[in-house]
Amino acid sequence: MNLLDTLTLFGTVALAAPIGLLGVEFLLGGRTIAGMGFLAVAIALVAGGYFRPSLKGVLAGTVTGVATGDEHGDADEEAYKD
Image (cartoon, rainbow, N blue to C red; front, side, top):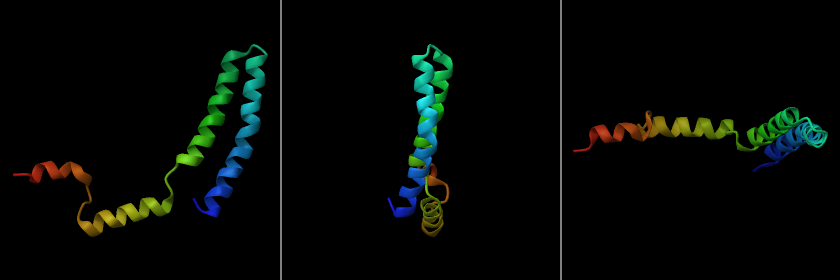
């Protein structure tokens, strides 16, 4: 993880933290559906920021697939087996 990814993740967590705290407050206050909704949004923000594919990785995978002739993945491998 490089510095730019770390700063982006920090910004995402800084945005998701108040949403998550609002969800916890709603849960403790008895508003279960709203609390779970806010917590789900906060978790989705952080998980999406952490697990999203980087543009460099997507482009490198595409270029590698074209260079090796494996544009369609391993699914076509079955058709060429003897």
